[in-house]
Length: 366
Length: 245
Image (spheres, rainbow over the protein chains, first blue to last red):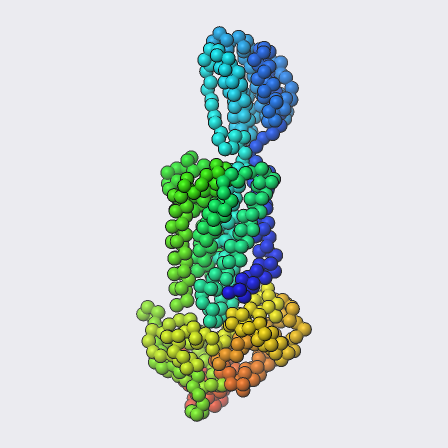
């Protein structure tokens, strides 16, 4: 047993390609998702067309600019300047205050702010839009309504719990953890087992007195260890580089990860029994595991927006449940009582897969 | 010949996969220390038979005893007494020579001391001591093959199964490899070998030729040649293959 584990480690460390996949992948992913594919926007250039120039509009302007989201590029004087301002490309948003703004609020209880956004980048536009709305709404609520004035018409009130600033890292980290654990364990184990088949060493091992279960265990244990190292890297990076907290119990997080890992490993073994070459194993894990996990688990695309068929499909993605669990632990700081159902689902999936893979592996020996 | 101890006894072995009979009533014995050639065209049922002998597969019916142990009842005990080397040499390319010995020594439950001794013994015999820390992928095919044979012999098994061990190797290296086989045989190790090279069949003490799941001929190369009235094993093989058609 020990000989197996040692050999597997030697093998992993000798093969620099494996090493790159193992440790480069999580690093690259988290940095990509964290920095490049970020949905957070800071210091967006805006212009303001203030047709009113009264106390209220000035105060709103001040509020907007004191948030770190916006930088005032310039004040505009007329409507005609709006178009050229966008054409230059630097300005992402123009805020237009209606004439007699403060006056209207007092007499009619409603005043209009127009937001014009550069939607050539729809994501940015959306986010800037909601930032601005948020700031104005907060101001209106606190300042005016708080003074006991006339009830005001407020169109939008969004509450962002747990991720007030809609930090996208918070959204991505649980997904990345899921994908990486799945990838490393399922893909790497299936590839290494198939590699032994290709090399003919699997045959030699099966002829030896070592029990098949031990052979598989020996192959799997190193990847469990490495996956945990990966998990630690991701968690540390997300905490210290992106400021993502772990509000719940770390121990619980690790325990749930172990469960998910075992499931992925048995998936890997299952894949190895049906594939003949390393490429085949790789393709299978890519298409049968990676893509569905990325697309259907709620990692990137919200499940609620999917057609019913895909929603049902997403239910059988273990990744979906695991992401829910991680979010609950890391962001909400909840305990097992809040997600025992999800845990149970993964547990039964694991049980099913372990039984299936052992059976499949035994059949191959016959 | 009959005085020698029987190390493999196969009696009326049948293996069916669904309706297909891969082995039809095989009966043969192999003596201790013998070099036994197990020949046959592709698909004749050789691999199936070897898998059964090694305890990897269960016979549908019939009895198989290897090293005095019933394979069907106690395959794990049999596995300790045999060594195995396949066409692909069963060694790890990304491990060094020494690490390969270490690993397989560990697999067969040898102590660290034993592993060190056996490794030194084989490397000395092969005059490869200076290569012990070289990665296997850097070592030429012929040497790899000899190493693989030594690794299969590391736990001093009673029988070594060689499944087409000389594929893709040049004639000189093949000759050297057969010298290793003779040496093992002289030390009392039985060698059970399958091959496609009929000149190698001549080196065996006895050979069996399989076709369509049956043993069509069994005997010393000399006797077989006389029976079929030809002067080399290649012709014996062709005669048998042709009779089938």
